[in-house]
Length: 117
Image 1 (cartoon, one colour):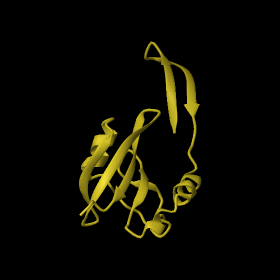
Image 2 (cartoon, helix red, strand yellow):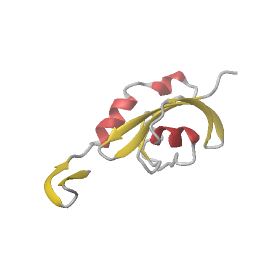
Image 3 (cartoon, helix red, strand yellow):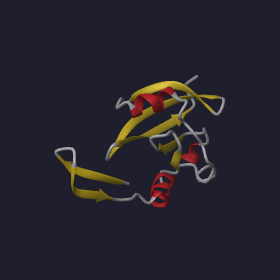
Image 4 (tube, helix red, strand yellow):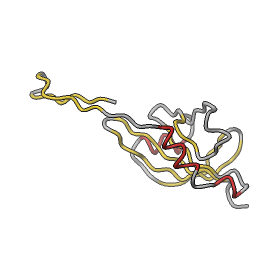
């Protein structure tokens, strides 16, 4: 990630750069041990395009997934936090979502679990 700092919209006065180690983020999410709940509860960290970059479920953490079609993802990337019922992988899930602002991008954290019966 990088961001230019401009003066008068024309002169570059600086560059900010940084990176996130998603391997460490994966391990942090997996340390929550949500798979022990045995109800498909999981937390995913999603980039601004809806692609999963970290997952609390160790069995799914290396599988590419897109959450771009979820209303919770769209709301989060529009700066809103909340919860809703969404359909992920053909399964209705209660999704709590939170935007994460990183430089000029908004990413999302999604906590998904089956809705109460």
